[in-house]
Image (cartoon, rainbow, N blue to C red; front, side, top):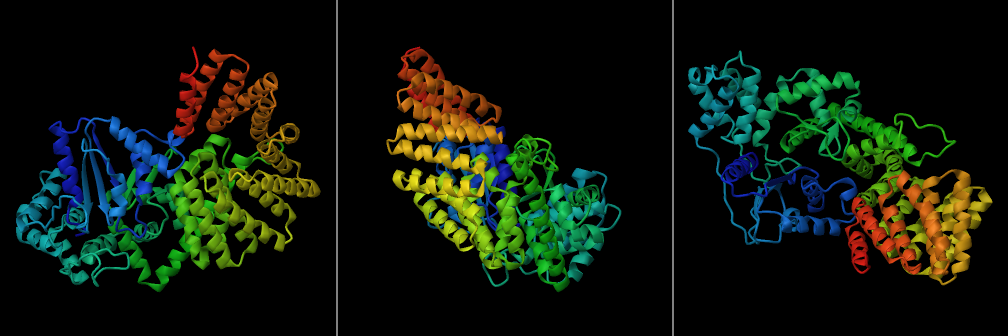
Length: 636
């Protein structure tokens, strides 16, 4: 049952086993949050495990399937280790995470018995009364060995253990209260808990006695008492923090939730951390610096139920969510502007350079994605649509294609709820881009077609042109080159008509790819040359790198090898400037092919190895392996 001490037992067992030297490969721990309102999926958990194994950022494979492959490959190479999968509610959360080898061992904690699976089950009961008293006593003496309250108030301590239902988590929370109130008697806590209501109801998960999150209410008396003891400002902050998106939240986002300055909210968070109602986590997901804040799922459920049970607090919570959505939109918009910035544009606020924008987005990614999903409620739909539109460039750059699909689908539904036809069209277009990036070209074709039709209905010719260009990309990826040529040509003509030379460059570049695929290489060379020239005029050096690379491919296929090598060289310098490791890997791979065609095998071998390194940095292990394989086929 919830609060029975499953995690504590698993961690203690892990410590003792490691002390015995049973697991030279170490231990891995992941909280699956199975009884939260947003349980972690196995796909999310594997990212945390890869992070713990040292695979992150550019090293992270771009698709879920490859992430699992990388995870199992690392385990296959590692000495015997212990994997602790905590707080699972369904086998689908952990079965995909099993190592696939009997070398390692796994501990799973759950409130539900997986009777259909061939695993050893250990059922835990509540603690014996004397063990409950011993737990609280040790907790108090660990802080102050001179604390005489357990001995002086033996009967009150026993009653406290009874009121806590002899559940370890409840007992630990009560002990934390006593540590904070070291000058007050245990009986005062007993009185407060007794006055809170029925403390004897121990409710199994899934029974009628659970709250809407499926959590047992047995811990509510302890949590209620802790909550009532908080000053008004701390209690309000705790309630609002329970509504935050994502498992961890940055201080600035919490300040927006609470409508406070960051310097005002930080001391309150530190006070809540001292009561063990909030935990601080250094760094968080991604590379963003600073402290982030996490709630245990039982505390989060308690706070959410407090808000849900009071009309005034519900209104306060709705306003808080609206504020954090607005905060995320403003900051994500600034970060997106920095990622898209070109010379001559207005300098974005908040982020002085590209790396800062990426670091902030990395740190807040989970919360940003979760916040967009709030848009499925009509009151947040408009804000969620705006936020989603700021995330596409980042999610594409980092190759978080699954998150991008999630964001685009949520934005599409939010726009529909809000009656925002333009927002719906943009969401369909972004969904198509995400699906294409994830290798789902046929689905992407449908998404871009829907976007195009919506733009046509709205008579938005500029956006329609973008949809045509994106449709061309999905058609080209689907192997439908002739249709792609038509789509790109239509995009080019529309963009010329509206005078957007910058976007026209992308249409020309895509047109060149489709022409080359159709065997019209000389026309492709002309198209890529036009794209390059337009990018240079717009001073878009990143797109210029792509145009140079694609021009190199067309020149190589036309037999103009030396010109191709020169074009690849131009692309490489620009790719490196932007730390575009995947693009650099592509260009190096093409350069190696050109060097082979020029009968320079030793140079080609070196270039293939450089391509493999670049692909490795870009989370593209398959491409890296292919490049290494080609290198081994050539002489030194």
